[in-house]
Length: 392
Image (tube, rainbow, N blue to C red; front, side, top):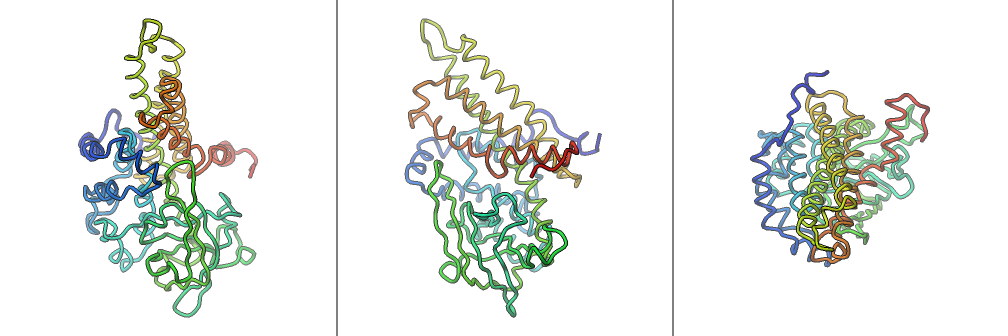
């Protein structure tokens, strides 16, 4: 057992954070989110409130204007948001994307960007990685960044780049050396922190994608876009390694959101099942209602323990790829099973928008697919943990 595991806190940790975030969420009830969902609008007021409370800059060290909290604390923030019925999808990327700058950027870059991100003056909400042809096979992305004097010339396309229309900055992964010219497929990829405010209409076009949820996702086109050399984070060609830590953090934070979703559904369904009477008795007395909720509760408690372990390992600097992936897998499934049980409990009323169940149900389904699909997590565990032949 590692030292990190021995210090994993059980019970309701960070109660003061839960209370403070909960108070903010009280000002953004279901009606607020329903209106945004209908209009496909961005929750600017909610994002601003979290920023002003210091919660979106929680992972930025105090020396750069943040509060310097742990990854587990950040996961608790997102869990609380989702448990309240709100959604952190509009702003969670800022927590894990800035980590690449913090860990691998130079001091000039940190001083230039991190204080503004912490204060809310700058929004870093966009992460340009996925492409239409490569999908989850990141090493096959085709967006190229070619050195051209004091700039890189970027050409290519990104897809499912959420919040690009509401972000000042984007963390961009592009190939700087052709795949056929490197020893390993993961070599030759580089990370850039680019300013979308300067590039929109100057080599960059952003198009929104309509989806079943209000996720503000887009596709981004680069056509001879010129970005300064000093936007390169770390060394050229080592970008894939830089984003791996960010991906582990992303999975742990998303696990927090799914845990919050599960707690929201279980609370709403249990309350309703105790009060709703059919055939002369509360529907919660029926095992057909009660057992799925009880099982979803057990799944949620077990999944959260894995998520806490993953966060503890991450914070201790211990390799946590397997744990981060398992946390995302188990928590997303617990959230989805709680969502399904809640839909069944509410019956026809679950489909009425005013109850907010159908909205949260749609949102919870996303995390079985993103940011990494369940099947890819299983393939990773099978190959890297169990030592089975590679299946992808």
